[in-house]
Image 1 (cartoon, rainbow, N blue to C red):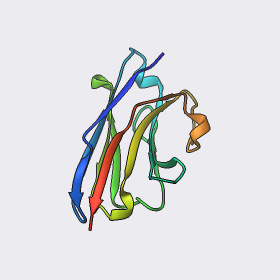
Image 2: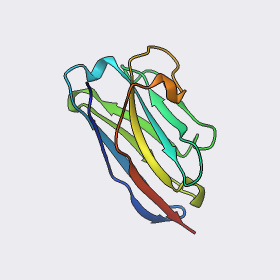
Image 3: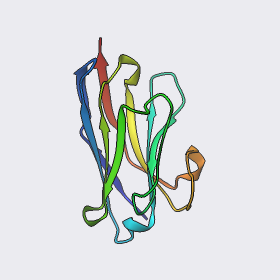
Length: 124
């Protein structure tokens, strides 16, 4: 069992930045692919970014590419999501998730554990 706790959400104006953090329990954090998803009101949860175990490979949704950066610190069991140049359409609850699958994992069904989410609100 892995427990995830996100933090760092908040309310910012368009063009602003936030840094989300997600701390995972367990001693095998460095074995997992980590991902970030988001869910806006009335919409399905969507993939945002993921990073592999060694931080060599990362992938992003087209909507955030060039603005968001995912990173991880295995010594701290933490994954981060830097959100820059935020837009009102980035408003959502952001969730971090763990996948035990090795490879390109972007589907929600490929993730095994989820955090409770942190709210990001971007005003125009």
